[in-house]
Image (cartoon, rainbow, N blue to C red; front, side):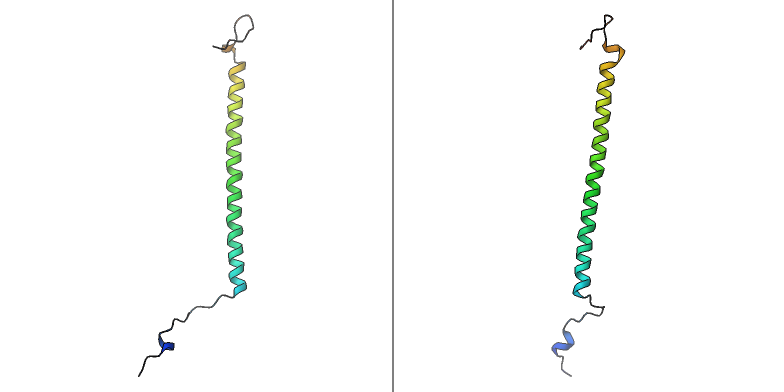
Amino acid sequence: MAVTHADIAPSPKCAKLGSKTGAFLMVFTILCGLLCFILCLFAEETRSERQLKDTIVLCIRSIFSASNWDGDGSHALC
């Protein structure tokens, strides 16, 4: 018995995905990636904003703290 090309040619045993399904999966994956990227940017902005706010609060506290003022009411820089 001879082995023919049809015997050795790869044939998918699983269900074939249609081009519409494949395109949908590709677009869905890209949209999920963009959503993750946008959420990461939002999280980074929120974290940076919080650090900036903390830094500003610390600067204001150091300016108006009692240890930085002289007895006569003038501000001591050093």
